[in-house]
Image (cartoon, rainbow, N blue to C red):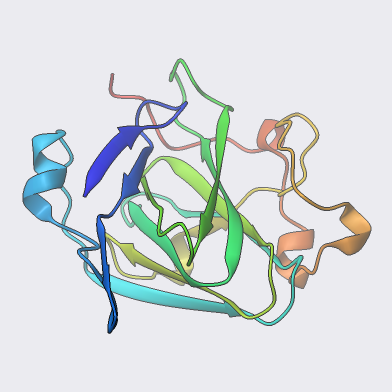
Length: 187
């Protein structure tokens, strides 16, 4: 497995080595030593699965605030999605900036997103399955989000608003400029 810095230095692209033979394939999806060698020390406590039945499903931009903030390791097990990480750490040199990475079952790519980033994705294929590990347990009291298509963010989503399939909650999320982040950049 190889880890590469994305356009946002704290978000990492993880490319597992995929071994293929006539039986199928095998890949190591997480290795604590490999992550630690890059300075990433994380203990995952929960795995989540999201299944979206049609293309154009948008989930996010979601995150949990302290003391239940979560780092995530995200991958697509089936289908494809455009995955977005948005820096929401006040004082960060990349505050309000995002990185978008296509994840698919075919490319096997994953993304590591530290706490202090909002996360969302748009499905590119029907029946897309997104699996992600998180570093803290789900806490409804600490769950928040930002508007996925906030024009100030400049995210080039692969669909127009009229094509997006959203939850009622995600349609009503605030814009970044209307929300006070509790996350602070630690340098």
